[in-house]
Length: 256
Image 1 (cartoon, one colour):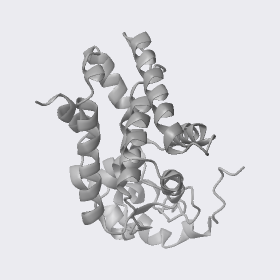
Image 2: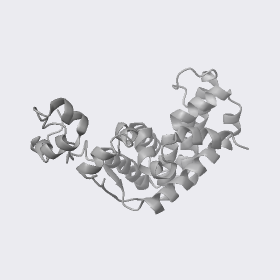
Image 3: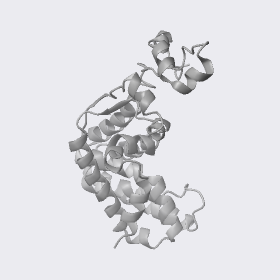
Image 4: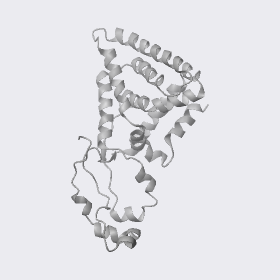
């Protein structure tokens, strides 16, 4: 029930006559029966309320720097480079979002959002064909961004050391649950090594906090709730345009 939009449908009828008149294709086929439900409207519930960065220039630049550091971290892991090429690609696709969020947390990078500016009805109609690809992409919602901010706050409250971040990233990279890995057992061994190293770092740094290691892993599990689409659309779409971000990540990972 929580996933159902509770917004009123009253707004659907706003300016519907003008919409039908200007939309020539619809007008030709149904000028005697105007459709009052075709007019796009803004939904105010958090699930569908779309948002964007308040200061995209600065934040996108900072996010790009975090992403570059993230890929360089992976490139500099000897064990990662020993994996078959297809395994490297699969792990990259699986872990780049959690690693990027950990990078945001480590850099202490906060950001503000605003409601996505609504295009005028006339612009939506006249530019419908040109903007069809943008309309098909799922835009960042307030709910999604709040989940991301909640993840960041959890890691800021934990106040991880650089070594804790490094070994935690290792546990996220070497994920044996990724499908079709040729070296799945090797990846599982590497994850266990990273977890052991993380525990060995946590204990002397926080001897009185017996639950810290479990708390770090629990916080890390929440990173899986953040979708690649949210990160791409929020931080990188203004920079890369219509390109596929994963293509850039692959190029960065395998460039020399």
